[in-house]
Length: 607
Ligand code: AGP
Image (cartoon, rainbow, N blue to C red):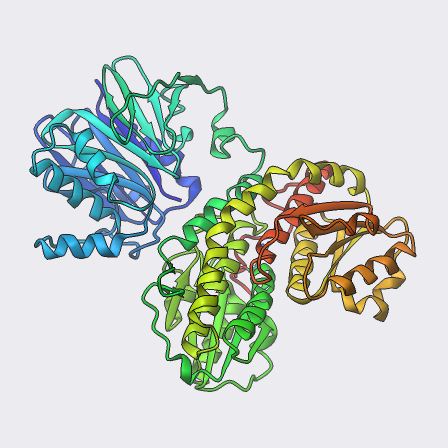
C-alpha cells in the first residue's frame, strides 16, 4: 500500500515529509517523491527506488517551502519508474494518491480527446489533469475543484492536492483508503497512516468515507462531497510508533487478516465487466482456443491456491488443468509444449523454485502467465503475461491476504478463459461476477465473528496435533489451514482429503485430536457429514466450518463456525478465513513470533 504525507505551516516542509515517509517504509514501496510550494509555485522531485535516492536528489536540488506533499508508491498501475512516481502535476495542481481509479480508462480517454498528453502510466495523473481542468474552468476554490472531480471518479482513493495558485491550502479526500489529519499549533499535517506524523503530533482527526478536508495552518474544515460541513472531534492517539505501524493490531498478520475484504475489493476493482459478464484482465490477450492444457506451478500457500485454480479452470473453462509443486516440476522433466499455458503463482514473485519451473516451461515452448503481488518482480518480469493481486505489501511471513487475493484472481482468470473457450456463457459469467462483487462484504461478516475462533483456540490450543479435512475445492483449504497453523504455532497439523480418512488418518483420531472439518452445504455435504460421524465415533473433537442456515451440522460437531453462503467457486475465499483466525489465535496463546516464525523467510529465493 502507498504512503502519503502532507504538511502546511511555519517550518520547512521537506524534512517533515521525508521523516514521515521514512516512517511508512515498513509498508513496502518502489518509488518516492515530494512536491513543495515555495509561496510562488511548487516543484516536484521524485524517483524510483528507496527514499535515500530521493534524499540524494533533494540534496542536489533543494525545494524550500512551508507547504508540501510526499508519497511512497507501491506500484499497481504502471511499473516502478521516476515518471510513474508521485506526486503528479498538471498545470499548477500537484496530487498524491493511494487507491485505484476503476474508471481510469474512460477518464484518460476523455482527457486525451481534449488534447491532454500524459507523462505516466498511472491512474493518479488523471486526478491532476481533471483537477487542473476544474481550476482552469474557474472553480472558486481548490476544495470545490476537487469535489467536482470526485463526482466523476469511481474506486478507492485517498488523495492530497495542492495548487500553485493557493499557497495557503491543502485539500485531502477519502474513499475506502485511510486518511488522517494531524493537528499542530499554526501547522497541520495529512497522512495515510498515523505512523507518518506521530512524531509531530498525537492529536488526529480521522477523515471518514466520502469526506473532504481543507487544511490550512490556522485549522481544518471538513465537509462531505457536496460541501456540507461535518463536525469531527480530534482524537488523542497514544499508540507507540510500533503499534501505529500495525494500526493498533497486535501483529502484522492480524492486521493483514482483517484487511482482506479491502485487499480483495482492490484486486477486483476495475476488472469486472458486468455488462458483458466478462473480465478485464489488465490488457492480457490470450489465444484461449489454442490452449490445450493449463499447468500451475507454485510453492506453499501459492500451491494451495493453484489447487483451487485447477477446480476453477476445469469447471469454468473446461480446459484440462494440472498442478505441480514447482520444486517437483523442475526436476521431473515434464512433458510441456507450445499448447500449454503455465501459470506461476507467487506472492513475492521471487521464489526460486517457481522461477526455475517457469524458466523450464518457457524453454519447452509453453506460454507463461504469472500471478504475483509485487509489480515488476522477477517472475512476472520473465513471464509472457502478468496479472497482479492488489493485496498491498504482505509483511507477515504467513500468507493470508495474498492467498485470498490469489483465489479472487484465479476466479477472474478462469472466468476469462471460460468466456473465450465458450464454456462460460454471459449469464453465468455475470452471476459469478455478482458473487465476486458481494464477496468483500461477506468476508467482513466472517471476520466480525473472529471472537468465536479465539474461544476455540483457547479450548484446543494445547493439542499436540490437528487434522484438517475437506473435499473438492475445500481440500486445498484444509491443506492451507494446516499450513497456517503449523507455520506460526509450531503445532503439527495435517490437511487431508476427507475421503481419505479410512485410508490411514483415522488411526490418529482420539479425544486429544481436534479435527477441523470444512463442511459447507453443497455437492460433498452428505459425504463430509459421514466423515464427521466416523471421527465422532472415535471421540475426536470436531470443529466444523459450515454455511449459515445449516441446522444439521450442530448435532454432528462439537463446535460450528458459520460462514455466509456463496457459489461453490467463491466459498473457499470464505472458509479460509476462520482457519487463518484459528491459527493466529492458537499462536497468540502459544506466544510464538507470529510475524517472523522461526526458520521461515517471507520469500524463499534459494532452493
Ligand atoms: C505461506 O504462509 C508461506 N509463507 C509460504 O508457504 C509461501 O506461500 C511460499 O514460500 C511461496 O511464496 P510465494 O508465494 O512468494 O512464491
